[in-house]
Image (tube, rainbow, N blue to C red):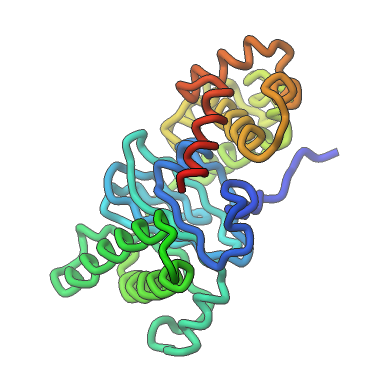
Length: 303
């Protein structure tokens, strides 16, 4: 039986923020999403959604399908629906993440064909600091629009949903105007990418079984040292950290979206000792599991 898994489809409104499961637009700060998913975001896709990462500060390593980019903010990258992508952000990176239903983008293009030659917009990665002076005004406008979007999303003012939609449309217009300046992709060793993607597939299939790294490496057909070297080169993280981050993502999801006790979550995640699970969570999140749940509950009530 093959271990191969389809590339995960992540619906932000279902996995991360269920308050917006049916919304056309989802916005959050980059640091908030990184706190939930980890700063290494494994290969995934978003069916029926466009996603934009606007990185204000810090470096980011991006893989859009098989194209590799390494850039520092201010920059943005666009991932159209179904395009596999992964990325790693530095610990102090900050910015904005906007996820938009594809229909909203298509409506813009249908209304003005000059924005894009076709609804099938290609992925793009744009370094704003490298743009010529003729794009300066548009780049500044984009930054201001994201600031306004962040402010509107944080408040519950009358007309909020319509304001979010209007700001999103303006942001999309600026992005489409600037996306023709996409960077040239850096060459990536195809064999390394295959190993890295295969490792992430196996993590997704077996992280609850707590496989040792030796078993992952054996399944891929490489040594542990080779696997670790590939992970450090592509994600700038050790291989063990990638497994830990997937466990942490699931632990956070269960703490946020289920009524399971910490002990129940411990066993659901394949840990045998609740005390060890609590130490593992605190070491990686800097908070005990119960504290994490309580803090997130307070943040949601105050939002």
